[in-house]
Length: 176
Image 1 (cartoon, rainbow, N blue to C red):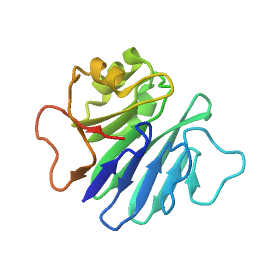
Image 2 (image 1 turned 180 degrees about the horizontal axis):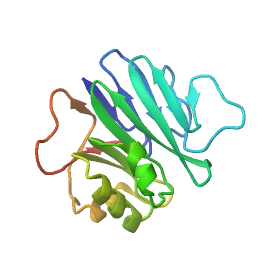
Image 3 (image 1 turned 120 degrees about the vertical axis):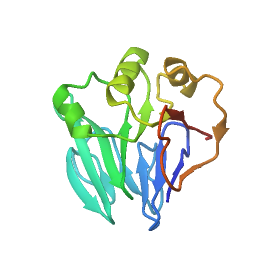
């Protein structure tokens, strides 16, 4: 089982069935969680991943995908058989090679600071589930407008316990 929450509306916290906590783009590190940053740190910090590359930790396969000459990092993870992409702002156009690195994504969390690029990426990747996140320049409603899901009710957490939707697309808005 995977549990998704958003501590501040901009970040995403995923907890796996074996209690591994993965915190993507938090303002400050979360206690007990492996933290992922979108900008590489010059001096690596313990329990922080901020560089492109491949990692395997506690049964979670992680790939950091560098863009903007490695100065901006998006992540794709595979946990409990589910492939999840987490894309931070500012969004960039994705090349065919970068899309190939993402692979067949089931769940996509996206900070949608640029509505046109967000829409293009969502159409190219075609995830079954979208988790919109706010960014410095946008709100969750900005992302919801792009994907035609304004008015979607927010939930405190989302638990993936079985399968994903077979058809269509589900939008999960997480409370902050």
